[in-house]
Image 1 (spheres, one colour):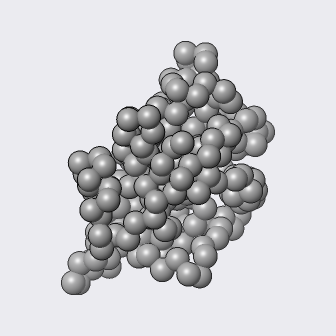
Image 2 (image 1 turned 60 degrees about the vertical axis):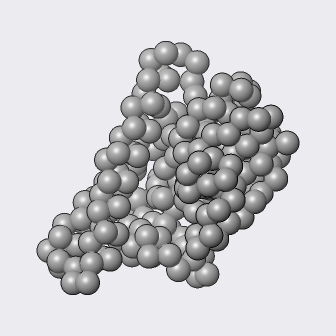
Length: 205
């Protein structure tokens, strides 16, 4: 049995929940509170979620977990078998984690300042929303970001981009409120449909 250490509303944990369900895997869910990370620290030596533990193996970091799941449970595939197509997915994931998330994280950091700089907030928010046009273009003529079927790229991006269309009222985390406020699917019908399509996938929680 796979044990998944996670936190409520965590975007990175949702990535793993989607991947586990896509692979047809069940997981025992251990929900932590951010005020007490002792369980995660004891298991993984660090305090961030998600973490999975199974058969004496411990893996942390959502992207690393998706790659580990792909190596251990081959089917159904989350990464293409063709080397060129696999490289495209890998490049997308690196870009999303380092560039796209970099902008979102910078916006959150600015808003957490005692006196946020309105100019910086406006510029970062504009960049965040403008990048949605890239996803709208990626979805031209296909149902998912990298082609007709679900890949790791969809599971990496969805938990963040979904806030352009929906946010549970009970989810009051600052980061998620900012993604909700500064992203909009208006005029981006393919992106809106993709969010709805991926949101319908199961999670293994």
